[in-house]
Amino acid sequence: MSATTAELSSVMGLPVHLMDDYPRWLRSRLEQEIGTHVVTLNAEMTMQAETNAALAQIINQADLVIPDGAGIVLYLRLQGKQIQRYPGIELAESLLQSVGQLDKPCSVFFFGGAPGVAAAAATVWQQRIPSLQIVGTQHGYLSPTAAAQLQQTLKQLQPQLIFVGLGVPRQEFWIAEHRLIVPQATWIGVGGSFDIWAGVKTRAPAWLADNHLEWLYRLYQEPWRWRRMLALPKFAAKALVNR
Ligand code: UDP
Image (tube, rainbow, N blue to C red; front, side, top):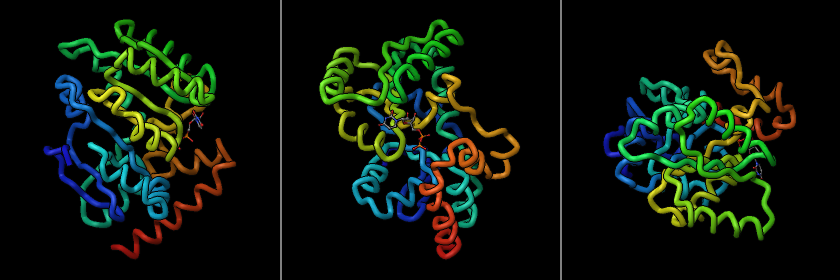
């Protein structure tokens, strides 16, 4: 566990690092060029890891695991921890807003989403922060040839901050398999964040998120997720039993 400044908690055998200021810790890693894999843990991912040992191993080996989902926060509160939720998209946004203030310029790469989405998200960020160095984007539906080409591109560009939005667990496997192509980079699996930044989807209103109901909004926006979301009541039942 490299998040030495963090308190390490456990959710069903998976690590969660609790610290006051995740972006500051990550900026320091970026400055020191220490390769970092960030996992943004939620209840769905936790339940997937219960039956997927390879995913569990990747989460256990990640350098930073943040409490992304309401379920994780409620689970840890049941264990007596005073913690706040930190959505992965907000961590990604905070980093984009602040990497320009680092002593060394920090280059960024967006990988994932439907064709055009990562590029649109990059345009939005570039307009918000003209000094941001987004050195490349790539959609997430690649042929084997295009996937090999992407590896070459990353090898050449050596971006320092790489967001991978392929959904869980695809993005976690992809990062674990490829992170040594750019060993000093910070890699974060950002799920559907490119869709939000590009305006293809919207985030739940704050009042729903504040009441731990972001999942309900996602179900309304993406009803086909219902099967995946059956993991949530299972997670809640386990959380109560484990308490
Ligand atoms: N996606 C992708 N390639 C794939 C499958 C999915 O790039 O082969 C993208 C998809 O377009 C979407 C994101 O992965 O932008 C998944 O978003 P979701 O919100 O479902 O992520 P999760 O809830 O799994 O974190």
